[in-house]
Image 1 (spheres, rainbow, N blue to C red):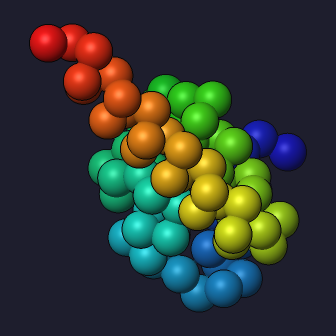
Image 2 (cartoon, rainbow, N blue to C red):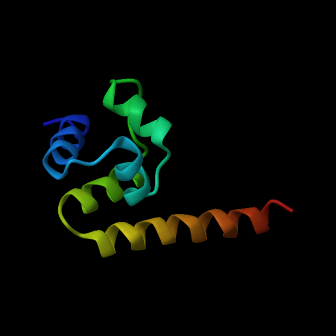
Length: 80
């Protein structure tokens, strides 16, 4: 099953909106909407967070999001 199908099935089961799911996994609603329509695919980092969330590993999804944010902040400091 493609990730978009997994997301849609999960959202339907939990009666979640796109905005709710996107916020829960730390992606924009617009990006999620595009993936669900088949426009593009999640990055490896986003896909990891989504898979962890879908599997019930909310802590793992949050940890992946925090690690990504930390890496982004570290990269900002190196750009100067």
